[in-house]
Length: 275
Image: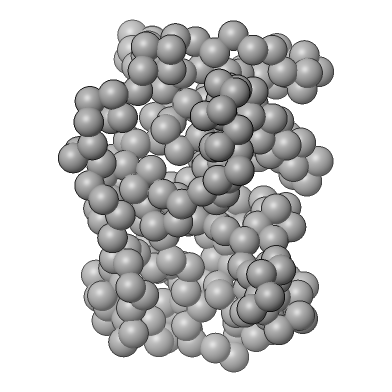
């Protein structure tokens, strides 16, 4: 399991003063969005380390020669359109098939277990940054709500009824759980459940940041790349915010993690006052 975030030093845990200040850099994509659209996406902004936040990590899969066999940037548009589908789909990518959603659905009818592994803040992890894979460079994560899933507290997922209910439960309920502790959902997590995209920059980008001090520039570029993927592949109503693993917001606006928490707290306060 990743190291305990609470054991890191104070600067690593809470961030530097520069990270806490609002990021001032302007994005060309921001300028192309209407105020109405920006506010619609901002309404979905959250503290990614809020208890109950679920995350499914993505990373590039390499062959024995070191070449990318499955690109997370290639897979992401499909996830945004079709949702998180059981592992049979990604298994097909490894074999060069790249099943369509319809082909996947046919196989789903024949199989009794189509797991989607994920982690939950306040469950098996304390912060998003400590989720398996998300503590590694050059990774992506889909954060989502489990409110559309039926909680299942153990045992195998083996009946059609359970699969159709889109159940989820602890991985220890499976005969052969993965090395990392966590949770597993069956069948599919739909796009309507998605709350955002989280990214971690690559080792090369980290090195450039250290040598040039261009941390904000590199992360802004990654945020813009991902925002284009969002805008080009799904309907506006399903657009979601984009964060780095430290909780800083990079799209549709740029805000430090501390400012995000203040923004969310103020929004919730206003909602209470309007009741």
